[in-house]
Length: 145
Image: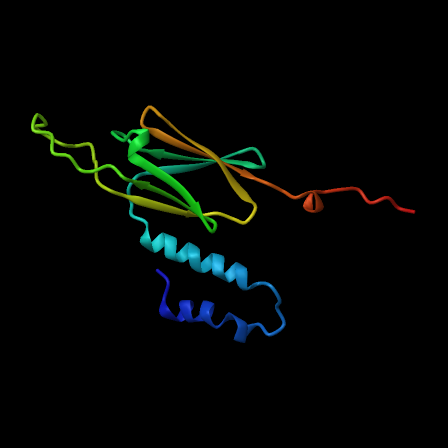
């Protein structure tokens, strides 16, 4: 849990670092991360897998949801997965153990991550994410003259 003291630290970052230039975006991202963690619920369960050096996959268990029932959106480095399915009372259902409740799960992404696609298969949502490294940041050899 983030205290109000920590939040005021983020708000007053410019006063604390008079010699830092351009780091305000880092603290904006940290603040967004805290906000996303507070607003997300514990449902649905998910995994984050790293595949190689530059690829990630978010796996989310969405039993009972179809492609038309979920929405995946990215806005300012925040990936949101939410349900848009309406609760329906099925009269033939004697016991309801599969949740159809509304949810929203948010993930904060680094600046160099790109969401390539989202795929729903057998009740599992797979979101493919790739780290894009610009040419100027890739390792290179410098010729010694």
